[in-house]
Amino acid sequence: MTEAAHSRGGRLPALVLFSLAALLAASLVGLVLGASGVGVADVFALLSGGRLTGTARSILVSIRIPRVLGGLLAGAAFASSGALIQAVLDNPLASPNVIGVNSGAGMAVLLVAALASAGVRVAVPLPVAAFLGALVASGLILAVSSRAGVSRLTVVLAGVAVNAVFGAGMNFVLTVSPNAYVGSSSYLVGGLSGVVLGSLAAPAALIAVGLALALALAARINVLALGRETAHALGVRVGALRAAGLACLCGSRPLFDGFDLAVPRGKVLGVLGPNGCGKSTLLGLADGLGMPACGTVLVGGRPVAGLSARERAGRIALLSQVHRTPSMQVRDLVACGRYAHMGPFGQLGEKDERAVDDALSLMGLQALAHRNARRLSGGERQRAFIAMALAQEADVLLLDEPTTYLDVSAAHELMSLVRRLVAERGTTVVAVLHDIDLALRFCDEVAVLGRERPTRLLAQGSPGVVAGGPALPAAFGVTAVPCEKDGVRAYGLFAAEPPAGMAAEPSAGAPGRP
Image 1 (cartoon, helix red, strand yellow):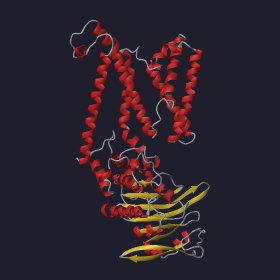
Image 2: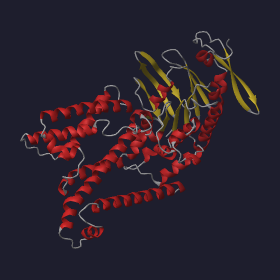
Image 3: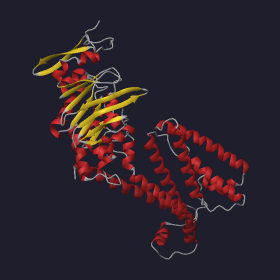
Image 4: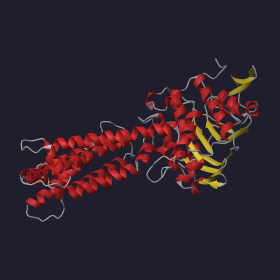
């Protein structure tokens, strides 16, 4: 096991033991605190099976133990549900009472109490009714938010709206049936005075199931915190890449029609093209984010559409143009790349830990492994996301504008790391770039897409061939002139007239243009 794994493994048991000790201490205080004179010795005598009779036993068994256990269950439910909601929605203000889950539970409890006060026999315990009400509220929140496209913001806004509706409904029930409050007041205000041991079985079972599901889905929740596209690329829900005869629409206009592109194995292919020509769409189709109207994308000779989510994540890794940075340590962010390889409960094995260590080392992030990802600089953050993609150990790495927002030095450093990755691992890399010099300098092959619809592949070949051909003037209205210093080749860009029949749209401020 790696040193980092030992470190993580040592901290977690210590934290769990400390939490259990604090929990036991608080429970003991709750059992002995009061005016009845029940002491610590009485508690230990009862728990150890010793002889304890009279008032002390009655107080402990009938009053204090049920209340302490009820408080522990309520605390576990509130803490776990709040942590899950805040993690999924990435919002520290999001909690069950804010987004309408509590009001749904309260509404169900009031309805059951109102029916009982009217003489209707209801065979549903209040805890079960509360759970079902919270479940209905959660379904309504998702249904409402889906009308505007499910996102973290729409879920929170829908939750606030559902909270207001159920709050008004609770007031209506209390107005029509005031006696409903009598049967539900202890639940609504959070009192534990009426709790008996027999009533704790149902909520304990529901909370246990919820905690087990939360632990089982912990890895998926971490991955979802990265955003939908990144989670898809990591496998939520061997060879080079080939797009054959692709056709798809953008609105009512064809974006691709009979488009072909072959990616060389174990090389870096840079994809250049004007804005709106479909570069990002092409990477999305390659990773299965969308389905072409016709044609297919092959990886290792197999259609991407025929791969399961985990199979696809094992063959293709996608670093999208826009990705959300969650509030987690860099090492945990990189570990999300192992999602497709994790066991049923999201645990990291020795092989996973080693893959994470290797990715951190290759990207030079060992010293930053325990820093919050949101505190990284732009270049460091981009390296962390590439490390996450590397941890997938996929054969093909798709990079959508990886140098965006990076300065010249950071961009060159990042592309040098990509070259090192290809040299050491033999990974096939497809990088969509806007910097022509960067593509010509660091890529083994360059593909240039045209600006006319449907998009055509104007050229694909070595940097020298593409730089001297008609594709760059046609796509960008510039020509690339090579220059060398100390054995390093770079390219200067100058305005050029597009070849006849390959008109380029004028671009204000193009290099060499007044």
